[in-house]
Length: 216
Image (cartoon, rainbow, N blue to C red; front, side, top):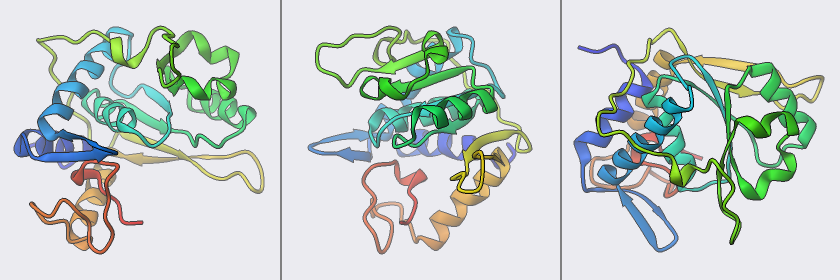
């Protein structure tokens, strides 16, 4: 039996629930199977760009489907997710990228104003600006029919969250894949996430897969 990790739990959920609705945004919805295929494609594309297990990859994305897909893809690579708030100022983004040693940045094109020049040559864009087709972009990353996910070490870093920095420079707080797995299970148990409810009691969560739903 595989060790308990967030990456393993997410992969199991994607495969187990197939065509069930996993995510809804506006009038569009995605099944678990669709998210599995799309995150496989993105993970394969990121691997071609040199992302490997334990590599930090920063996300500068608004709440969107692309965030979920990128999140799942990084888990499949056993990479380290470094999420950045889209309300940060450019100096704070630059600090987090340099401090974390991010190998790659995935960012919405509409947030280009807070992407440092030093990171643009290692940025994969999510094109959300009409008519703008910056490259490389998330939607055109090539897949791989032979893609196979990496196994995450439960003791390895899976997430780095930056503090608010109210008393100095923001600090990166590291969370392991094993700890994140326990966190997912705790949300499922104490949030009473039922197999067919599609919701997290008592709040409706419609921007992330049920397996990553977090009570607010």
